Length: 253
Image 1 (spheres, rainbow, N blue to C red):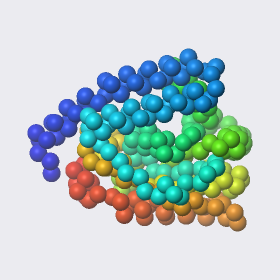
Image 2 (cartoon, rainbow, N blue to C red):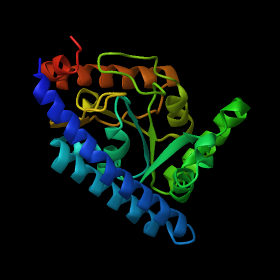
Image 3 (cartoon, rainbow, N blue to C red):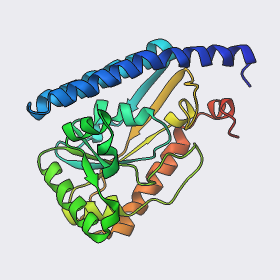
Image 4 (cartoon, one colour):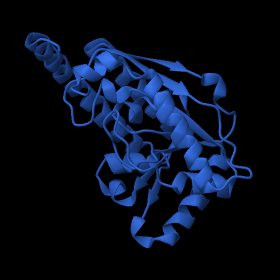
């Protein structure tokens, strides 16, 4: 286990990360609001700058880097990305190499000043979960429209952040969208949760591994089969790239 002095140093580094990160996030959000009337290409440029600055801060201040494998598997047109959500990192970094990305968010998030307006500015799909089947049909319709435009739909099938080696049921929504629209699912595995764990202040130095799998074609498949293939690949690949020593560092055996 890391010594108390080393962990104190990690706490200090992680604390130093937050002021500049919050500053660039707030500034980017304000710019997105001001640029609402400008073309999407202008607004997405602000998002790309925010991503690059955020990843740069993590590298310089926290010593947190990343490596990506399987970029040759990324399709040329619209598709659906599915990944585990175990950290804040993937919400920032996946947009770096899966661009331009579109997020599906709870409608209530768009009501938050600056943050919510920024989501609107980048054309996030706001979902009213209280309308049941109507919400699903609207999600399918809006998702298809965005992917027809060449956008990438990002979904976390477990629906929430989970700690490494933990697992929640993979929800069917993304598989239904894939089957109904004909767009492929691109599975992505990573071990970001081992370096920036859920609810953890410390961001551990090291190299996060990201692996992009081969697209799963929905043709001739039912949603249950699609989500089963996605889950099996993400879970098995996640186990392959997991770092046992880093799991011990964060208290997971």
